[in-house]
Image (cartoon, rainbow, N blue to C red):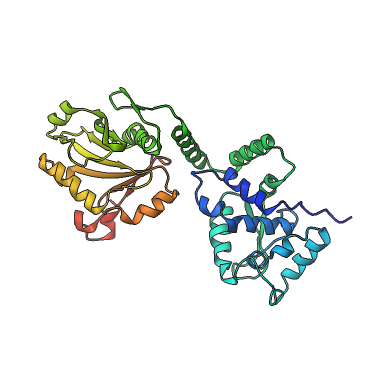
Length: 365
């Protein structure tokens, strides 16, 4: 008896579920939740390419699928197309294919190899050379099951959670949870409570910038400063949330509210010479550009700080966010970049000119 083929959901069902399976904070999320990924998964299901059945697809089957063919869901129609689609020259006269054949690399590299395989959603056929044109990709059974249209909403969400726990790394799950909590804070109408380094609490208006500020003050300082102190915290409209004038005066910094100050000014009071950290919390715009760096440098040098004791930090919610991708090229050399979703990591934009580096080994110190 011929084994029944796996059911094929509507393409919209796949598209709607991908953002639930791969929430904000997931690496390569734009590829994992995009139209191309949804169609890769659809074709795998259509061809019954589920790992363990010894059925596989190749990228050409995705970009040569058509709307007309995708509506032919009888088992015999699917089998006929699948067998025909791997024969040489089978797509010469295809009318209205989903994509042009130059989409092959995007399907194979961006969606399958770099995104779906690393999270355990797709398996690769062993023993097939990389240069071979033979079909070699299939969906992992547990992942394929997440697109069953018979699942109730509650069951689906539980199955997604189980799949994530089984397949995503602890680091990936932690990152997703940080982003999820940040999104929840952003949507709340209540004030956001920020715990300062001296253990005092301050209220900030709800919003994505306030969430990033909270992460900077509570997590960045814990991970990267020895004896952190907050000199200034402001929010939208440059409303001052917290200011320590006595400490600022003690280290020689005059905070002139009339100037265009950053969102946060921190200090590390260890060792003997304090380090001054200017922070811009970026939810939509406003990273530390070269012009911004120069303006902030002037504020610090006027107070007698040497350039080697001044640090500039641009803080984002997540490295995979569209905001970071859009603004990354504007960030000044000689500054730092930090992401709330990966609090123990730091991007150092080293500049050979500013620190007199002569070779690669010195960059790595």
